[in-house]
Image 1 (cartoon, rainbow, N blue to C red):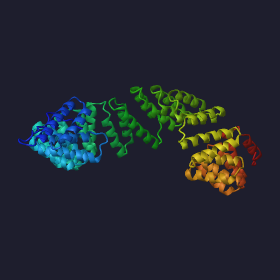
Image 2: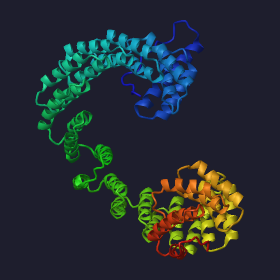
Image 3: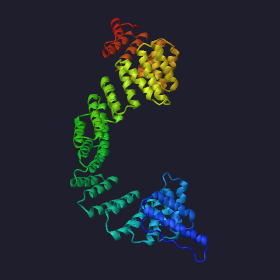
Image 4: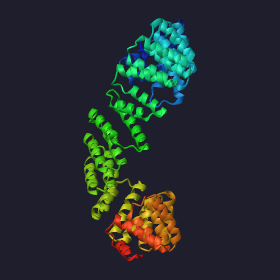
Length: 570
C-alpha cells in the first residue's frame, strides 16, 4: 500500500452557536486525530491505529478522520471483503468532499483496484489529471488504469501527451509497445520499437527489444538481425541467444538451435536459475533425439566452471547421470550438493536413492547415518536406511531402524506406521518368524487398508507358505488393480494363480509382468519358466530358467531345474 505523505487535510472547526458538547467532541476528536498522524509519521502504526479508531468513535462526521479510519481497515492483515468495502467507502467520502487533497485522493485511487473497483479508480485518476495536469505521476497512473480496464488506445494517447512534456522516454515507449501488442497492432509495435532504438542506436537492450518485437509478429529474419546487433554490443547477455534458439527450434534447424543454446549457457550474464531451466529443456530435447553425446558433459563443465558452488547445477548434473544410469557419477554430483548444504535432508535422500539404485547398500546406509547427524528426527531417512539393511541381510539393524522409526512417528500417522510395520513384517519373514511377520502385516493392513505394497508382500509370502491362497488372491488383486502395470505386483498375482493350479491365468499375468520388467529380474524369469512348464512347454521353460540363472548364478534350485530340464518345487 502507498504511504500517505504530506500535511493532514484541513478540517473545519465547530459552527458558531452550535451545541457546546458537540463542539467539544469535535475538538477532542481533532486533537486525537492530529496525535494519530504524529504517531504515524514516527512509524508507530499500532498507536496510530488505536488513536484514529478512538477519533472516529468520538466524531464520525469528520471526513478526514473517516478517511484515515477507512485506511486503517484496509491496512489490517487478512482484511475481510466487508471491511475492505467499508474502508474504501469511508475514504471516498472525504475524497469526494475535498477533491483538492492530492495525496489522499492519490492513495485512494491506488487502493481501488485491490478490491476490483477499476472503473471507479479510472474516474478518480481522470479527476486528478484534470485538477493536477502537471503531475507526471498522475498521467502515468491514468494510463496504467486505462490499460487495466483494457482501454489501450486511451492509455497510448495519455502517454503521447506525456511525451510532449517529457520527451521520448524509454520506459513510456516500452509500455506503449506492450499496449500495442494487446491491441494486436503490429505496425504500432514496430514503430514504437524503432523510435526506442532511434533514441539510442548503440543500446544493446533496445536492439534486443526491437528484435523481440519482430519475433512476436513472426518476422524472424528481422528479429535475428536485431538479436545479432544486441549480441555484438553485449556478447555476455544470454537472452538474445535464447530467443534465437527458440526461432531455430520452431523452424526445425537443430544445428543452429544447439549452437544458440550453447551460447546462452556459456554466457556470463544469464542468471543461474535461467541456465538451469534452459539446460533441463535442452537435455530433454537431446534425449528425445537419442543424443547423449559429450556435448551435455561439456556444457556442465563450463557451467560449473562459472558457478562452482551452485547446488542447483550439481543437482541437475546428478539427475542427468541417473537418466543415463551412471549412478557412480550421479552420487559424486550429489556429494558436491551436500558439501554446499550438508543439512539438506532432501539431498541426502537423493544420494541414498542413487546408491540404492546402484545397489551400493553400504554407501546408502553410510549416507543415511550421516544425514541423521543433521536431521535426527527425519522419518523419511529411516525409511531409506531400513530397507537397505534388509537387502544386505543385516536384519537386526533393520529391525532397530524400524523400531526407532515407530518410536518417533506420529501415533496418528497411520500410513507411515503401516509402511514401517510392513518393513518389520518383511524382516520377520526373512528371520523365518512367520507368526510375527503375518501379525505385523495384519496390523499394518488395519492401519492402512490401501497399502498396496503391503498387500503384495503379504500375498506373496502366503503363497510361499501355501497358506490361505484365497486371501492371497484377494490381496494381490487389490494391488494389481491399484497399479496394473507394476511388474512385481503382476508377478505375485501370476504366482498366486500358479499355486492355485490355474496355469493358463498364471501365464497371462506373468507375460504381462515381463512386458513391464524387460526381463531383468531373475525371480520373475524363473516363475515364467515354472509356469511355461506347467502349461506343457518344457523347452521354453528351460530357456527362461537359463536366462534367470545367468542373472543369478547362486540359485541352487534353479540350477537343478536347468540341469534336469524339469520343474522342482523344493
